[in-house]
Image 1 (cartoon, helix red, strand yellow):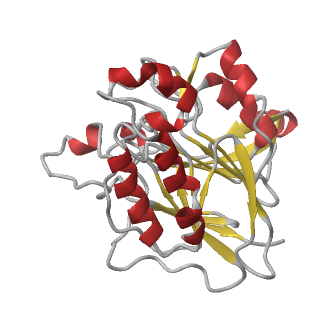
Image 2 (cartoon, one colour; image 1 turned 180 degrees about the horizontal axis):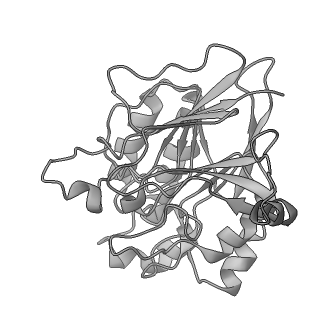
Image 3 (cartoon, one colour; image 1 turned 60 degrees about the vertical axis):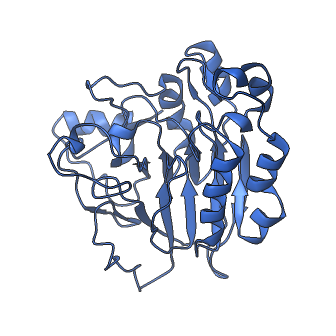
Amino acid sequence: MSVLVFKDPTPSETNPPPSITTSTAIIHSIYDPSSIPPKPSEGNWTRFVCISDTHQHVFPVPDGDVLLHSGDLTGTGTLRGFKITMDWLYGLTHPLKIIIAGNHDLTLHEPWYETSFYRWHQSKENTTAIRDLVSGEAARRAGVVYLEGETYDFQTHDDGRIWTVYGSPWSPDFFNWAFNYDRGQDADELVAKFPKTDILLTHGPPHEILDKVSDGLSVGCESLRARLPELRPRLHVFGHIHEDHGVQVGEWASASDLESSTSGQTTDLDGGTERTVFVNAANWPAGRRIQTGERIPFAGRGFQPVIVDLRDDP
């Protein structure tokens, strides 16, 4: 069984690292929007731009090969909210835009919405029109791919690898919002269906990975965290917990590696090591980082779209 190891300490909420570099990934979480860091020029790389929890706000997004949106596209899933968000996404330059829903996108969880709409809306929203906005002809023409418990394969370079991504809108129960599941057995059964892919897109975080709320409590999914050693994606993007926007890179080590390390023997966890880049891409400013007296705009410093360049070898 592989074990997830974070070699560096968890970044502080007030001073996250601006960039992280490994042999197969370069991540930029804080940068000058007027001077975006360039993609590596040597070798094949794919640039992923990660956003989440935009709640029908619109803002500039760095160019890239693939846009990844981890849900909460809207405030409460209204047709008006989806029109605002999807018009914005249609107009972005990324050739491919992969999106999922979140707990705020009420109308996309249609069976649940049929019996719960009255808690938020005076009358039912047009779910057919909303579904068309995220996965209809206009979305396809704009390069939008909406995933709801589905896998998608794509290639960004003719001589590059074929990437696989799985997207799930579900997150642990939060006052019975959309796409909620109970912790424990329900969670275990849900995440057991997740296939192994290069990229994992979920709305909520795994337990104890960029999942702390303002009081420091970790609220991520324990079942998802327990499933990660089998999935080991190269990139796992999520949101939901606005306060813990940021990046961590975990290395997958065997139990024998850890035993050698703790016994004093030298273990090389760099060469040939599998890594997962974890990104909490929430763009809504929240938590201790906004308690500085300085106004942080939506998707401003500390909550910017996260740029992830991954080596694109077949």
